[in-house]
Image (cartoon, rainbow, N blue to C red):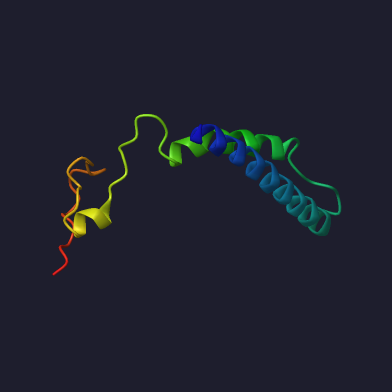
Length: 95
């Protein structure tokens, strides 16, 4: 469910970013070259690229569970969560 929401938000964000970038390219093209310049279907391309890339950056299926650093620092739990990287230094203990 969370991945679906991320994909929908990435589609909307990519579409808006593509529209903005397309307008900026068009304005620069008119100012520099005197003709309309741009990339055809740029908003659609960016929306698709965002929808494909977003789940990779939000921890899709198979990602390690998040660590509860606050619980570890205060001595509550932490045993059931595994760190994302085995080479990470141990958390600091509060005195």
